[in-house]
Every structure is written in structure tokens, then in C-alpha cells.
Image (cartoon, rainbow, N blue to C red):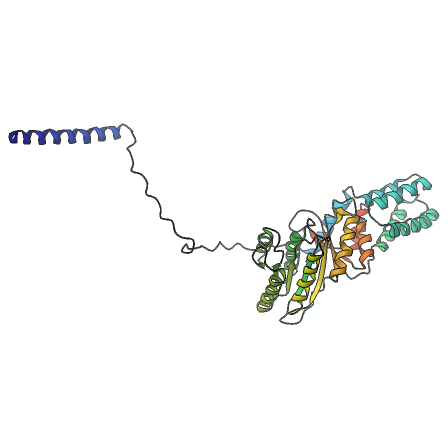
Length: 369
């Protein structure tokens, strides 16, 4: 048996050599070798993982205010705005009889101009066009322009009150119900102010809506504006307080505070809005309370406006979706209702589609000029 051991060793050695040779030949013929199982990567706990800061991106350059209202004028001229249609129909009428004036008045009311302003406009136009006639289209258009411009109160101060003492920022509080585009409007307003050379900080006090803080942060980051936020469900007044505190520390020109979209039927939430304003004023005066209204809501927007005015002193109005609204008359009626001016208008979905309201440009657009 011992004499056979060298023989078995020799046979084993031959077998091993044969296997190696076969493997080499197989690999040369293009057969993929069998690879070992990949090693499982070690899971690093989140607390120990290093977070790389995002790459810095140069802030966008927002559009200057001067050209924004010009775009609105063009859009109004090409829209199906009910107020614009009423004016166009009147100018194209063959004669100004009772039926023509009745149709004109009905269209104005449908455009949410309001009963009072509609009556004033119809009476003024009947008196002037009844004497002058519409045989001279240029003169008739000028009369329409002047009378409608008078209804929009061109003498109202539509500038934003952003005056502030050194070391204390101006504060703009944005209010409005759900669905008006308020948070988006906050972001667009930040862009508008940055275009005017101001430093801006955003306060994300809408802590009840999921992702509201993230949405506002995204808007601000595009133009190099920081956002102060809090956890979902946090006290909105506390977030607003911290935003003003940060604005003071940074020497910021303007702090814009976004608030939750309050349903005007919920008294508790409306009381909360009053609390936010009071807490802010412990550090800085609130120079502007801007009420955001969806222009397409018409008379319902007026109901919202009245309720908000009872809770906070609304100083200005922002009308969103004005360019595509059939309710263009709301510009006049909401100003009459609250006694405060429309200061900003939304022109569309673009980042720079927010413009300071200009009464003359608005009327010019309605008349298709």
C-alpha cells in the first residue's frame, strides 16, 4: 500500500495540471470566468455619514420691474377678459341704443366690476358718448380710457412700504386662503425685491402644509435668498419671530413672512394669524400686510378680503392669475371694498410673472392698445 502512495500523488498532480490547462484554454476561447461573490458594503450610520455641501450655483438675475407690466398689458390685450370684451363690443357697436347699453352693463357685472362702479361707468359713458357719439373711434377710445382709469383710482399710493430704521428690517406679512398661490407669490416677490437691489430673507411660517418650507426654500435659493423655517406643525409665531431675529442679526433689508393658507371659516386659525403679527411686532414693525387673492374667484375673493381685513390691517392687495381671468373688474371692486390699493399683480406661471400694478398700463391692456 505504501508503494502505491507515490503513484496516487503523481495521478493527483496530473489531474490538477489538467484542470488548470483546461481553465486557461476556456478563458482564451472567450468563456467568462466565474467571479467571486461581491463583498457587501458596510452600512454607515446616518449620524456618522459625512454630508457633502451642495455645489454653489450662481443666483439668477431676476427681470427688472419696468418690463413686467408691459408684458401684462400685452396679455390682457390678447385675453378673453370679460371687461376687455365689454369695452371692445361697445367700441364696435353701430349705434348706442338701449339694448347696447343693457348688454354693456350686464357684461361689466359679469366681469365683477361691481354694481356701484358699473353704474358710475355706464352713466359717465352714456353722458359723454351720447353727446360725442362713436363716429370718431379715436375719441371714443380715449373717453373709455379716461373713465375706466378714473375707476381704478390712479392716485392711490401703490408702492410697498419698505422703510425701516437701521439694523431693523422692513417686514412684509403675506396672508390669504389656500389655493391663491400665496407661497409662490412670496418667492416671486423676493425675486422682484432682489432685482431692485435689496437683501431679502424669507420666513416660512406656513408650518401646517407639507413641503411649504421646502417650496419656499427652493424659490429663495434661485436668487440667493435664505429661508428660516421650522418643523412641520411648529408654532408659526415662533418661526416668524426667529426669521425677524435672523434678519436683524444679518442686517437684512426686507423679511417676507409666509403664513398658512387660512380658511376664512375657521376662527381659530384666523386668531393664530393675529398672533403671528403681534409676535413679529415685538421686534420690528410690520410695514405691509399683503392679501393675496386669486382674481378668478370673483365675488368669493371679496368675501375673503373682508374677513382678513377684520383680523389684520391689510395694507395692499396682490391679485394672482389676472392675465387669464374673465373677472378683470375685481381690480376696481376689491379696492372699493377694502379701501386699499392693488399693489402687485400676477401675470402667469413664470418666475418673474409678478409686477407692480400700474393703473394706466392695466387700462391700456384692457382696451387692446
